[in-house]
Image (cartoon, rainbow, N blue to C red; front, side, top):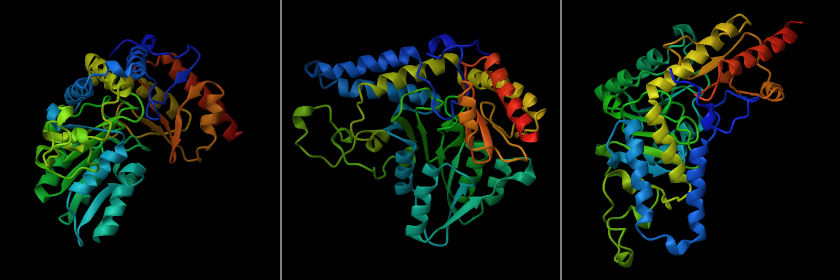
Length: 384
């Protein structure tokens, strides 16, 4: 386990922020890197053409270490929805086939597939919540991966239950039946070990602002080598071959830059966001993702045991990702619960029928105890 890293974050002692799955806080050094990058715009005469490329190259190289792939396999995107839309444009499906998604899947990994199904005549196949199978999402997905599935569009961690999917097993079955595998890793990458080499997805996207501890409006898209000849969402200047030669940009070309770079968003050379995101990812690599997972998992196990005594229940590991705790109970969860807790400076989320508790390395045992004390008071009121 890692020692508490709260000193790297601007979190007051009286704040129990257990809500990384909503939005992570930026580390102080990441904020400084982003602020320094933003200040470059004050002196545009100092922004030489090479600076449009160095930051994105460093981002790709660093992200590739977290994904387990080559830097050439990484595209720079603004959001998970952008990456998912890119994938939807480049994986084939036709009438009579189906696109597999989970029940209560995050909207940005649902709407593009519903649109694609409507446009092609394919069916949208929804994997039901696996209540009868010990919250084993993997078993439910594997049962649903039948011959007509053309695309499996899945997360690594289901965002309202914390359910963990065994992507290696799922990837093997997808290859057996010829289905494309498209992943949203936004709720897992940086907090749960992942290897594109082991899973072999066609596409995998992750927004930076959650478990990658980065800024908002930047993210990464893994594109498998076999998909790198596809069609990007945008046609912009910097994704083309020889774009670094500014004097020759008027010599239009049909050729794209190498690897996944053709899928980069326009204005990818964000001088504020990229440095902050890179710093955050380098810190994650220094901590090691497996240790982050174990550290958050230890806090969540403590929380799960205490919450059980208050009438809450949650999926057990290994069906649940260690960094993710979704507490449920027979009685409905009050929608105003986050506001009630916020008045005590305790911060969590309500998603679906669950209280979602997602600590990180900046949290302490005392943070967890404060949450349990609040839940005890609330549970006492509901039974009075």
